[in-house]
Length: 443
Image (cartoon, rainbow, N blue to C red; front, side, top):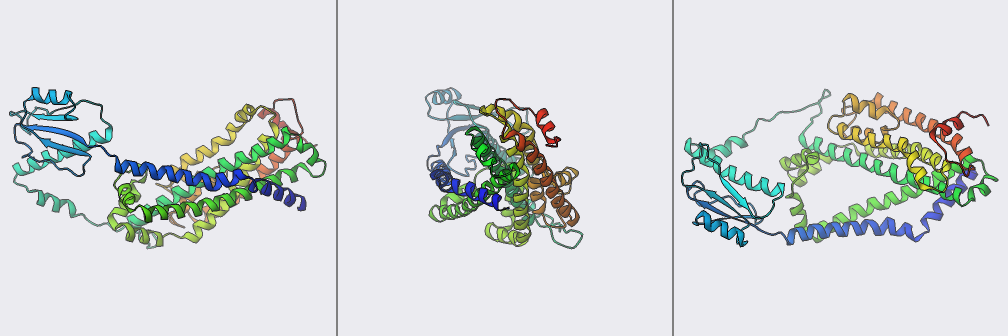
């Protein structure tokens, strides 16, 4: 045990004391946030107007179209079609909308819209939405229905009270926050497994290529060397991870304090479908109030405890496999890429299952992914965020932890068998077939 701790201490100090550790731990996140802030800043300050000329000869729009922002501007003109085409060619307007005098809303005629440049799908959708909204109001007026009456009908929605079997209320805010917490937690573990597993593999490869392992093996057992490297590099990753969390929350708070306008702009940006549920919940309940109510419903002690357990368990499980691959690889890094595929595929598969689990935590696929040791570190975090026993039962949570511990012991045993032979093997390209044979050798 003392030898494992000595090796772990060496691995930890040799990496933390390097300048590259400070650059990657502190400098890289700050650079990313600076570029991210610059992108948002320039997107706010340098938005170009898209100017559209509207020749409404049938007086369908009554001389006005709804302008929500300055990004798209409708300008009504009394210009013939030939003149509009000339104005379009000379870049006086970005596009024009021509409504003939014979146009009837309920008829078969179509509106003529032309632009001098290609339009993005978001710009096209905004233009079509505003025009359709104006035409809808015109149709309602023909049916003697005012716009205020339609708005009042749309605002009057029936309220459905969603509760679980034990009487807990499942409101939109709680579901939205659970979705976000589960997604973030699972994605963080996904990144951790890739980054620090690869770091363990490269550390083993460096010592093998430089023939340092031959000297170390004369004093310690191969298993002690492997566990020492896994423990030391894992501690480096944990320290780096904590620093990143502090930087992320600190920089985000600083951006919100220094540039409050950027927050409002980000809230007005189009939201991807994956985050639509959380955003809608925030919108319906109020931004700050809804967030606080949603956070109060989350069992953060349970989530933090599970995150630490699955972070450590997932890292130990996969880092032993990465170490086994590193011990079997020689000078050619391409050999490692070919051997990594069976290890990385379960991680990617776990990420795919997590996308399903955050929306449906009790589905058969989510249950399987949270129990299977190779995918449980990622998938279980998505289910735990929905609560226990609502998102995951106590039995499933305990079984998942037990299976993960057994999986770690099994992969460590297999990796130790491979590591014992591979760390001292040179000049021969190892294959998975040979590595499996090494596992069942007695000596």
